[in-house]
Image (cartoon, rainbow, N blue to C red; front, side, top):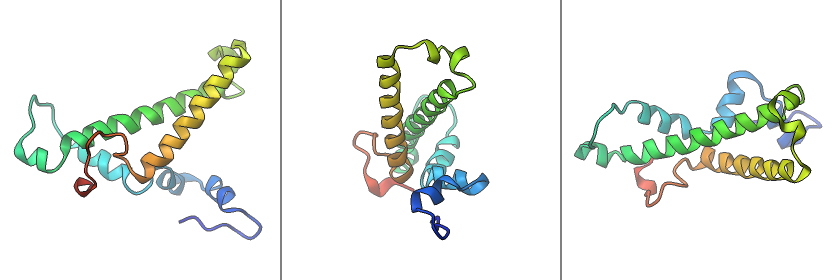
Length: 132
């Protein structure tokens, strides 16, 4: 939990967090656990009964989903950065296209917030009891 300094809103306090604490805040408490469990899974063509019991497939799917969300946020932030707008082609986009990218960015940020609280929220049929 980030506590605001005197005269600072809770949102401003969250935005002013730096370094390792900022990463912890951004990831939430569940994403690192899910990603760590998924990274332990080797390359195989099948899942063992233990893998099924541990919801390994759900962990792999969720990790792919929140990783893609993060990568898209990173990409959009990069092309929209004032120092990169010309080289990225963002500067030359129509107002309508920029608005669509802004809308996409807002949706991705909303999804990221949900991922940080519930990493499995887009995994079809995932039961919350299997979350580790």
